[in-house]
Image 1: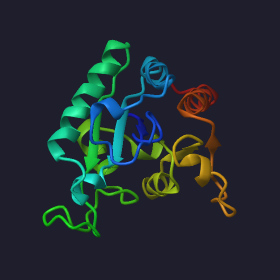
Image 2 (image 1 turned 90 degrees about the horizontal axis):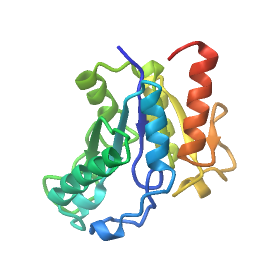
Image 3 (image 1 turned 90 degrees about the vertical axis):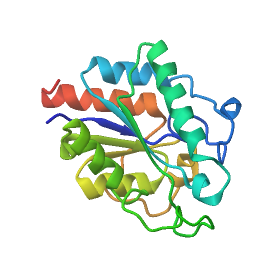
Image 4 (image 1 turned 180 degrees about the horizontal axis):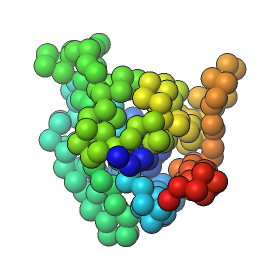
Length: 192
């Protein structure tokens, strides 16, 4: 089993523009491809895990989410970086749309997407990292024993200012800073 780096999508690798319903609104952070490439070069698979409650709310069609993720993987590949898999949760227990209105084990902070990735890709969650812009991303990391890193992009700007952050919180500026921190940790542990 191998460790991995799990990334939230909106606010972590791209600007959070609310319910993303058109590809033209997708704005990748300029450091995202380079950060993923560095993680890949260190032998770490990168997996995106994202809540897409806009599907449940009726703002976004699920087919669009799938097509966007295929396009996103190709865009990273064109830059020499690989996103091994993208998992998304279309559910929201408070949404109006029938089949998508449910409490599930995949919507973060539940750990279903990470556990599914671990089963599919033979990953060691306890040696993995979760990078995101919300404390709910850190909560999912804690559930599976992964190291969580909150980025100060997207919602992370306000989340990091929280008056009572968890004692073990690791807060960094952005995905590139998280990548550097992860690589430094691997070097210090003699892991590669």
